[in-house]
Length: 376
Image (cartoon, rainbow, N blue to C red; front, side, top):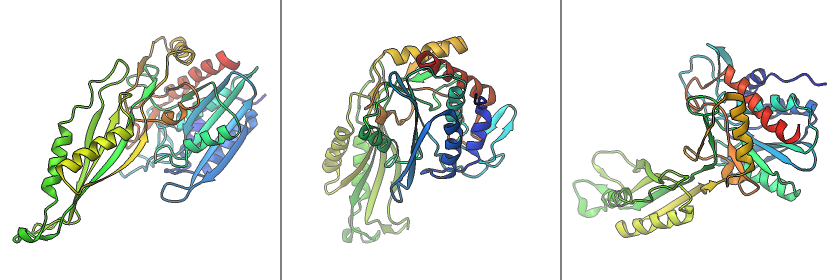
Protein backbone atom coordinates (compact mmCIF):
# COMPACT_ATOMS: atom_id res chain seq x y z
CA UNK A 1 0.00 0.00 0.00
CA UNK A 2 1.44 3.39 -1.05
CA UNK A 3 1.61 5.92 1.75
CA UNK A 4 -0.85 8.76 1.11
CA UNK A 5 0.70 11.93 -0.27
CA UNK A 6 0.67 15.15 1.76
CA UNK A 7 -0.87 17.79 -0.54
CA UNK A 8 0.91 20.70 1.14
CA UNK A 9 4.32 19.05 0.95
CA UNK A 10 3.82 18.20 -2.73
CA UNK A 11 2.58 21.71 -3.50
CA UNK A 12 5.70 23.14 -1.86
CA UNK A 13 7.95 20.87 -3.92
CA UNK A 14 6.19 21.94 -7.12
CA UNK A 15 6.56 25.62 -6.21
CA UNK A 16 10.29 25.13 -5.62
CA UNK A 17 10.62 24.15 -9.30
CA UNK A 18 10.54 27.54 -11.09
CA UNK A 19 8.28 27.10 -14.11
CA UNK A 20 7.51 30.45 -15.70
CA UNK A 21 5.38 29.89 -18.79
CA UNK A 22 5.96 28.02 -21.06
CA UNK A 23 7.17 25.39 -18.60
CA UNK A 24 9.01 22.11 -19.02
CA UNK A 25 11.52 19.88 -17.31
CA UNK A 26 11.98 19.66 -13.57
CA UNK A 27 8.44 20.42 -12.43
CA UNK A 28 7.13 17.66 -14.73
CA UNK A 29 9.81 15.28 -13.44
CA UNK A 30 8.58 15.92 -9.91
CA UNK A 31 4.94 15.28 -10.80
CA UNK A 32 5.89 12.12 -12.70
CA UNK A 33 7.75 10.84 -9.63
CA UNK A 34 4.58 11.35 -7.57
CA UNK A 35 2.21 9.71 -10.06
CA UNK A 36 4.03 6.61 -11.24
CA UNK A 37 4.12 4.89 -7.80
CA UNK A 38 0.34 5.43 -7.68
CA UNK A 39 -0.07 3.28 -10.78
CA UNK A 40 -0.45 6.01 -13.39
CA UNK A 41 0.98 5.53 -16.86
CA UNK A 42 2.62 8.89 -17.59
CA UNK A 43 2.99 10.23 -21.13
CA UNK A 44 5.02 13.41 -21.74
CA UNK A 45 6.06 15.28 -24.85
CA UNK A 46 7.54 18.61 -25.96
CA UNK A 47 6.19 20.82 -28.73
CA UNK A 48 6.93 24.15 -30.34
CA UNK A 49 9.54 26.83 -30.53
CA UNK A 50 9.87 30.34 -29.11
CA UNK A 51 8.09 32.60 -28.52
CA UNK A 52 5.08 30.37 -27.76
CA UNK A 53 7.17 27.29 -26.94
CA UNK A 54 8.77 24.98 -26.24
CA UNK A 55 5.96 23.58 -24.10
CA UNK A 56 5.77 20.31 -22.21
CA UNK A 57 2.49 18.44 -21.81
CA UNK A 58 1.52 15.41 -19.74
CA UNK A 59 -1.30 12.89 -19.80
CA UNK A 60 -1.32 10.44 -16.88
CA UNK A 61 -3.86 7.60 -16.90
CA UNK A 62 -4.87 4.96 -14.35
CA UNK A 63 -7.48 2.26 -14.88
CA UNK A 64 -9.68 1.56 -17.89
CA UNK A 65 -13.25 1.75 -19.05
CA UNK A 66 -16.12 3.95 -17.93
CA UNK A 67 -16.59 6.22 -16.19
CA UNK A 68 -13.56 8.28 -17.21
CA UNK A 69 -12.94 11.26 -14.93
CA UNK A 70 -10.30 13.77 -15.99
CA UNK A 71 -8.55 16.40 -13.91
CA UNK A 72 -7.00 19.24 -15.91
CA UNK A 73 -4.42 21.72 -14.74
CA UNK A 74 -1.20 23.53 -15.46
CA UNK A 75 2.26 23.69 -13.94
CA UNK A 76 3.37 26.95 -15.58
CA UNK A 77 3.18 30.21 -13.66
CA UNK A 78 3.31 33.91 -14.50
CA UNK A 79 6.62 35.74 -13.87
CA UNK A 80 7.04 36.49 -10.16
CA UNK A 81 7.99 40.18 -10.33
CA UNK A 82 9.92 42.10 -7.69
CA UNK A 83 9.04 42.85 -4.08
CA UNK A 84 8.16 39.50 -2.50
CA UNK A 85 8.37 39.13 1.30
CA UNK A 86 10.12 35.80 0.73
CA UNK A 87 11.63 34.26 -2.38
CA UNK A 88 8.84 33.51 -4.87
CA UNK A 89 10.11 29.95 -5.34
CA UNK A 90 11.06 29.20 -1.72
CA UNK A 91 7.59 27.89 -0.76
CA UNK A 92 7.68 29.13 2.82
CA UNK A 93 4.81 28.66 5.27
CA UNK A 94 3.97 32.02 6.86
CA UNK A 95 1.05 32.47 9.28
CA UNK A 96 -0.62 29.27 8.16
CA UNK A 97 -0.27 30.02 4.45
CA UNK A 98 1.95 28.48 1.78
CA UNK A 99 3.62 31.40 -0.01
CA UNK A 100 5.12 31.19 -3.50
CA UNK A 101 4.43 31.72 -7.16
CA UNK A 102 1.91 29.05 -8.16
CA UNK A 103 0.64 28.41 -4.62
CA UNK A 104 -2.76 29.73 -5.65
CA UNK A 105 -2.71 29.34 -9.43
CA UNK A 106 -2.52 26.37 -9.53
CA UNK A 107 0.18 24.06 -8.21
CA UNK A 108 -1.64 23.53 -4.92
CA UNK A 109 -4.73 22.23 -6.75
CA UNK A 110 -2.60 19.81 -8.78
CA UNK A 111 -1.02 18.59 -5.55
CA UNK A 112 -4.43 18.35 -3.86
CA UNK A 113 -5.75 16.12 -6.63
CA UNK A 114 -2.70 13.84 -6.64
CA UNK A 115 -2.96 13.53 -2.87
CA UNK A 116 -6.68 12.74 -3.20
CA UNK A 117 -6.14 9.87 -5.64
CA UNK A 118 -3.29 8.54 -3.48
CA UNK A 119 -5.88 7.85 -0.77
CA UNK A 120 -8.38 6.05 -3.00
CA UNK A 121 -8.53 2.39 -3.84
CA UNK A 122 -9.79 2.64 -7.40
CA UNK A 123 -12.32 -0.15 -8.03
CA UNK A 124 -13.11 0.61 -11.66
CA UNK A 125 -13.22 3.22 -14.36
CA UNK A 126 -10.48 5.56 -15.52
CA UNK A 127 -8.72 8.51 -13.92
CA UNK A 128 -6.58 10.90 -15.92
CA UNK A 129 -4.57 14.04 -15.35
CA UNK A 130 -4.26 16.42 -18.30
CA UNK A 131 -1.43 18.76 -17.37
CA UNK A 132 0.09 21.48 -19.53
CA UNK A 133 3.04 23.82 -19.24
CA UNK A 134 1.36 26.62 -21.19
CA UNK A 135 -1.90 27.85 -19.72
CA UNK A 136 -0.64 31.26 -18.62
CA UNK A 137 0.69 31.98 -22.12
CA UNK A 138 -1.04 31.68 -25.48
CA UNK A 139 -1.60 27.91 -25.09
CA UNK A 140 -0.47 27.40 -28.69
CA UNK A 141 1.29 24.14 -27.82
CA UNK A 142 -0.58 23.40 -24.60
CA UNK A 143 -4.05 22.00 -23.95
CA UNK A 144 -5.14 22.06 -27.63
CA UNK A 145 -2.27 19.65 -28.33
CA UNK A 146 -3.32 17.46 -25.38
CA UNK A 147 -6.74 17.22 -27.02
CA UNK A 148 -5.06 16.23 -30.30
CA UNK A 149 -3.14 13.51 -28.44
CA UNK A 150 -6.33 12.15 -26.86
CA UNK A 151 -8.26 12.23 -30.13
CA UNK A 152 -5.49 10.40 -31.99
CA UNK A 153 -5.84 7.56 -29.46
CA UNK A 154 -9.64 7.66 -29.23
CA UNK A 155 -9.42 8.56 -25.54
CA UNK A 156 -12.33 10.68 -24.32
CA UNK A 157 -13.11 11.57 -20.71
CA UNK A 158 -16.75 11.60 -19.68
CA UNK A 159 -16.25 14.73 -17.57
CA UNK A 160 -13.38 17.04 -16.64
CA UNK A 161 -12.70 19.10 -13.53
CA UNK A 162 -10.20 21.96 -13.88
CA UNK A 163 -8.45 22.95 -10.66
CA UNK A 164 -8.35 26.70 -11.30
CA UNK A 165 -8.83 28.92 -8.23
CA UNK A 166 -12.54 29.80 -8.43
CA UNK A 167 -13.59 30.33 -4.82
CA UNK A 168 -14.07 33.93 -3.70
CA UNK A 169 -14.56 34.52 0.02
CA UNK A 170 -14.12 30.94 1.24
CA UNK A 171 -13.29 27.56 -0.23
CA UNK A 172 -16.28 26.06 -2.01
CA UNK A 173 -18.39 29.18 -2.43
CA UNK A 174 -18.03 29.32 -6.24
CA UNK A 175 -17.53 26.95 -9.15
CA UNK A 176 -17.24 28.03 -12.78
CA UNK A 177 -19.70 26.36 -15.15
CA UNK A 178 -18.56 28.30 -18.18
CA UNK A 179 -16.26 31.12 -19.19
CA UNK A 180 -16.43 34.19 -21.34
CA UNK A 181 -14.50 34.29 -24.58
CA UNK A 182 -11.54 36.61 -25.05
CA UNK A 183 -10.13 38.38 -28.09
CA UNK A 184 -7.20 40.82 -28.23
CA UNK A 185 -6.96 43.35 -31.05
CA UNK A 186 -4.49 45.95 -32.23
CA UNK A 187 -5.73 48.84 -34.40
CA UNK A 188 -2.91 50.37 -36.48
CA UNK A 189 -3.54 53.76 -38.09
CA UNK A 190 -0.92 54.92 -40.61
CA UNK A 191 0.28 58.50 -40.90
CA UNK A 192 3.17 60.55 -42.26
CA UNK A 193 5.80 61.67 -39.77
CA UNK A 194 6.70 65.34 -39.73
CA UNK A 195 7.52 68.42 -37.69
CA UNK A 196 4.66 69.83 -35.65
CA UNK A 197 5.42 73.30 -37.01
CA UNK A 198 4.74 72.07 -40.55
CA UNK A 199 1.58 69.97 -40.26
CA UNK A 200 0.80 70.39 -43.96
CA UNK A 201 3.82 68.18 -44.66
CA UNK A 202 2.63 65.40 -42.34
CA UNK A 203 -0.46 63.28 -41.69
CA UNK A 204 -1.28 62.89 -38.03
CA UNK A 205 -2.70 59.41 -37.23
CA UNK A 206 -3.75 60.27 -33.69
CA UNK A 207 -7.06 62.11 -34.36
CA UNK A 208 -8.49 59.35 -36.58
CA UNK A 209 -7.41 56.74 -34.02
CA UNK A 210 -9.14 58.82 -31.34
CA UNK A 211 -12.34 58.71 -33.44
CA UNK A 212 -12.06 54.92 -33.66
CA UNK A 213 -11.63 54.70 -29.88
CA UNK A 214 -14.62 56.97 -29.26
CA UNK A 215 -16.81 54.97 -31.65
CA UNK A 216 -15.87 51.66 -30.07
CA UNK A 217 -16.30 53.05 -26.56
CA UNK A 218 -19.89 53.94 -27.49
CA UNK A 219 -20.74 50.40 -28.62
CA UNK A 220 -23.19 48.49 -26.42
CA UNK A 221 -22.35 44.84 -26.92
CA UNK A 222 -25.18 43.27 -24.88
CA UNK A 223 -26.93 43.28 -21.53
CA UNK A 224 -25.76 39.85 -20.44
CA UNK A 225 -27.76 36.61 -20.15
CA UNK A 226 -29.13 34.44 -17.37
CA UNK A 227 -25.76 32.70 -17.17
CA UNK A 228 -23.28 35.40 -18.26
CA UNK A 229 -22.54 39.01 -17.31
CA UNK A 230 -22.52 41.64 -20.09
CA UNK A 231 -19.66 41.51 -22.56
CA UNK A 232 -17.12 44.32 -22.17
CA UNK A 233 -14.59 46.04 -24.42
CA UNK A 234 -11.56 47.58 -22.71
CA UNK A 235 -8.69 49.56 -24.23
CA UNK A 236 -5.43 48.36 -22.71
CA UNK A 237 -2.68 50.39 -24.43
CA UNK A 238 -2.00 53.32 -26.78
CA UNK A 239 1.32 53.89 -28.53
CA UNK A 240 3.17 55.83 -31.22
CA UNK A 241 6.71 55.23 -32.50
CA UNK A 242 7.95 58.49 -31.01
CA UNK A 243 7.30 60.47 -27.85
CA UNK A 244 9.12 63.62 -28.93
CA UNK A 245 7.03 66.73 -28.29
CA UNK A 246 7.79 68.29 -31.69
CA UNK A 247 7.20 65.27 -33.95
CA UNK A 248 3.93 64.18 -35.54
CA UNK A 249 4.10 60.36 -35.36
CA UNK A 250 4.12 58.20 -38.46
CA UNK A 251 1.61 55.77 -36.99
CA UNK A 252 -0.53 55.16 -33.93
CA UNK A 253 -1.78 51.94 -32.36
CA UNK A 254 -4.54 51.11 -29.89
CA UNK A 255 -4.68 47.76 -28.11
CA UNK A 256 -7.94 46.39 -26.77
CA UNK A 257 -9.50 43.28 -25.28
CA UNK A 258 -13.09 42.09 -25.46
CA UNK A 259 -14.38 39.58 -22.92
CA UNK A 260 -17.58 38.26 -24.44
CA UNK A 261 -20.43 35.95 -23.51
CA UNK A 262 -22.08 33.30 -25.64
CA UNK A 263 -24.14 35.85 -27.56
CA UNK A 264 -21.04 36.51 -29.67
CA UNK A 265 -18.30 34.78 -31.63
CA UNK A 266 -14.75 36.09 -31.67
CA UNK A 267 -14.64 36.44 -35.47
CA UNK A 268 -17.83 38.54 -35.49
CA UNK A 269 -16.35 40.94 -32.93
CA UNK A 270 -13.17 41.28 -34.98
CA UNK A 271 -15.29 42.08 -38.03
CA UNK A 272 -17.19 44.75 -36.06
CA UNK A 273 -13.95 46.46 -35.03
CA UNK A 274 -12.62 46.27 -38.59
CA UNK A 275 -15.75 47.98 -39.94
CA UNK A 276 -15.63 50.79 -37.38
CA UNK A 277 -11.90 51.31 -37.94
CA UNK A 278 -12.40 51.48 -41.71
CA UNK A 279 -15.19 54.04 -41.30
CA UNK A 280 -13.45 56.32 -38.80
CA UNK A 281 -9.85 55.95 -39.98
CA UNK A 282 -9.62 54.88 -43.64
CA UNK A 283 -6.45 52.89 -44.20
CA UNK A 284 -6.40 51.51 -40.66
CA UNK A 285 -5.66 47.80 -40.18
CA UNK A 286 -6.76 45.48 -37.39
CA UNK A 287 -4.71 42.59 -36.04
CA UNK A 288 -6.42 40.09 -33.78
CA UNK A 289 -5.84 37.04 -31.63
CA UNK A 290 -8.82 35.07 -30.34
CA UNK A 291 -7.84 33.35 -27.10
CA UNK A 292 -11.02 31.33 -26.89
CA UNK A 293 -14.76 31.34 -27.43
CA UNK A 294 -17.35 31.59 -24.68
CA UNK A 295 -18.71 28.28 -23.42
CA UNK A 296 -21.29 26.98 -20.97
CA UNK A 297 -21.50 23.47 -19.57
CA UNK A 298 -25.09 22.18 -19.57
CA UNK A 299 -26.41 21.36 -16.12
CA UNK A 300 -26.16 17.67 -15.38
CA UNK A 301 -24.18 14.92 -13.65
CA UNK A 302 -20.91 16.85 -13.34
CA UNK A 303 -22.66 19.78 -11.62
CA UNK A 304 -24.33 17.45 -9.14
CA UNK A 305 -21.13 15.55 -8.43
CA UNK A 306 -19.05 18.64 -7.63
CA UNK A 307 -21.77 20.53 -5.79
CA UNK A 308 -22.62 17.52 -3.60
CA UNK A 309 -18.96 16.94 -2.68
CA UNK A 310 -18.48 20.60 -1.74
CA UNK A 311 -21.67 20.64 0.31
CA UNK A 312 -20.76 17.43 2.14
CA UNK A 313 -17.27 18.67 3.03
CA UNK A 314 -17.93 22.35 3.75
CA UNK A 315 -21.64 22.62 4.47
CA UNK A 316 -22.12 25.33 1.85
CA UNK A 317 -23.75 25.29 -1.57
CA UNK A 318 -21.54 26.90 -4.22
CA UNK A 319 -22.64 29.63 -6.61
CA UNK A 320 -22.56 28.55 -10.25
CA UNK A 321 -20.66 31.32 -12.03
CA UNK A 322 -19.27 32.29 -15.43
CA UNK A 323 -17.44 35.42 -14.25
CA UNK A 324 -13.72 36.11 -14.34
CA UNK A 325 -11.08 35.26 -16.91
CA UNK A 326 -10.67 32.40 -19.31
CA UNK A 327 -9.45 28.89 -18.56
CA UNK A 328 -8.45 25.88 -20.62
CA UNK A 329 -12.07 24.82 -20.35
CA UNK A 330 -12.53 26.82 -23.55
CA UNK A 331 -10.65 24.02 -25.31
CA UNK A 332 -11.66 21.01 -23.20
CA UNK A 333 -15.39 21.64 -23.65
CA UNK A 334 -14.92 20.08 -27.11
CA UNK A 335 -14.37 16.73 -25.34
CA UNK A 336 -17.01 16.62 -22.62
CA UNK A 337 -18.71 18.63 -19.84
CA UNK A 338 -16.23 20.80 -17.90
CA UNK A 339 -16.32 22.77 -14.65
CA UNK A 340 -13.62 24.70 -12.81
CA UNK A 341 -13.25 24.45 -9.05
CA UNK A 342 -10.38 25.31 -6.77
CA UNK A 343 -8.97 27.54 -4.06
CA UNK A 344 -9.99 31.08 -3.07
CA UNK A 345 -8.42 33.29 -5.73
CA UNK A 346 -7.66 36.57 -3.95
CA UNK A 347 -3.86 36.25 -4.34
CA UNK A 348 -3.55 34.75 -7.82
CA UNK A 349 -0.86 36.48 -9.93
CA UNK A 350 -0.06 38.87 -7.05
CA UNK A 351 3.12 39.45 -5.09
CA UNK A 352 3.22 37.06 -2.12
CA UNK A 353 0.75 34.71 -3.84
CA UNK A 354 -0.39 32.20 -1.24
CA UNK A 355 -2.88 29.56 -0.20
CA UNK A 356 -4.08 28.66 3.27
CA UNK A 357 -2.75 25.31 4.46
CA UNK A 358 -6.22 24.40 5.73
CA UNK A 359 -7.74 25.20 2.32
CA UNK A 360 -5.25 23.02 0.45
CA UNK A 361 -6.01 20.10 2.75
CA UNK A 362 -9.78 20.60 2.54
CA UNK A 363 -9.62 20.98 -1.26
CA UNK A 364 -7.89 17.62 -1.43
CA UNK A 365 -10.68 16.06 0.65
CA UNK A 366 -13.32 17.53 -1.68
CA UNK A 367 -11.49 16.14 -4.71
CA UNK A 368 -11.32 12.78 -2.92
CA UNK A 369 -15.09 12.80 -2.40
CA UNK A 370 -15.66 13.55 -6.09
CA UNK A 371 -13.37 10.78 -7.30
CA UNK A 372 -14.63 8.26 -4.74
CA UNK A 373 -18.23 8.71 -5.92
CA UNK A 374 -17.18 7.71 -9.43
CA UNK A 375 -14.46 5.08 -9.19
CA UNK A 376 -13.92 4.33 -5.50
